[in-house]
Amino acid sequence: MNTSTTFERQTGSVARSVDDLAEWLARHLSPSSHLRLREPMSRRTTLRVGGEADLLLEAGTEADLAEAVRAARSRGVPWMVLGRGSNLLVRDGGIRGLVLTLNQPYFSRIEVHGVRLHCGAGARLKDLSAEARRCGLGGLEFLGGIPGSVGGAMRMNAGAWNAAVFDRLDRLRFMSAEGEVQELPAAQVPFSYRRCDLFRNHIALAADFVGEPSTPSEVEARARDLNERRWKSQPAAPSAGCIFKNPAALPAGRLVDELGLKGTRIGGAVVSDVHGNFIVNEGGATAADVLALIELIRTRAREVRGIELETEVEIIGE
Ligand code: EPU
Image 1 (spheres, protein in one colour):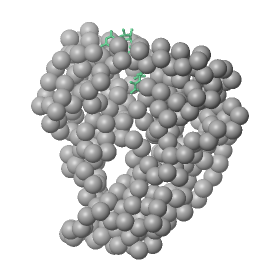
Image 2 (spheres, rainbow, N blue to C red):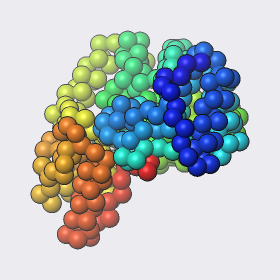
Image 3 (tube, protein in one colour):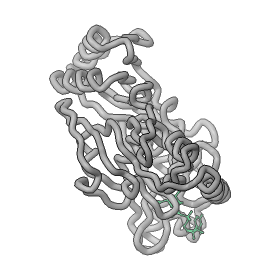
Image 4 (cartoon, rainbow, N blue to C red):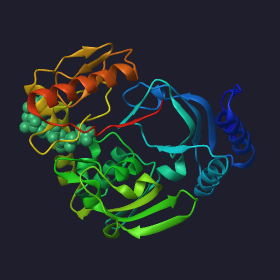
């Protein structure tokens, strides 16, 4: 297995456990896994902010992933799974412990069997949507505009244009915190709007999506239409997608717009002029800038409209 940089020893028992874990992983995992030390999360998130993760493992196989989870657990090192970093805000102090990511070829595979698409959790939704289009399978066009991975989208039941991932999921494969692998029909897994609790303590490994027989040109036309609507209504600058879940009263974007907060800036973070529920990094933003802007919006929504906004973006790190 490969390690990228020299790991400088830290003080404290967690730091020593992380050191020990790094050495163990470097010796025991297969060559298809890659270990990165002190990896800046600004490189791994679409918002382009966030401090360093102590250790980041790009797992190449399920066996390596299970070994890593068990090794971290036995050393008391916290771990988390990173998708494509498109719905994530990492604080500037970074992440203590191990970050696992499934961007290697085994986890990025997409295989078509009739109307079913079997894909690894690390596959990009954009690639899944493109593959469905190529095969003339409809119903997955909405995934093309979501900048995440299959696993990340399962974790939060991501959606767009009145469709969500669990509408199209047939079967799930996942790993427990003890490294045990299990499969379940999607129908047996509870989910709701932007939420699937199973993945709070399990790692998504793979999924079967089901498409509807159509023709490549029909699917292409629908995908193009959604893509155009997206680029008209959402900003192209680096962001983490929608910052807040839509409250019951009205869409969060409209609320921010009505509060007159579009264009509000803190440091390099700006409330998008295009869509009020997006905070964009106009260059050099820190996580602290983004968090301050989130708090400003929440306070105004509470004071002016009595609405408690809940973040959709996941906020982690120190
Ligand atoms: N609106 C405004 N001003 C704004 C933004 C929106 O008045 O600045 C109005 C729109 O005109 C529309 C309504 O608010 O009448 C809703 O806006 P939009 O159609 O853009 O949908 P949304 O509810 O803001 C949701 C998802 C998006 C997804 C779009 C398209 C959530 C929190 N957001 O946005 O998902 O792409 O629908 O289907 O559910 C994400 O999850 O990260 C995300 C971007």
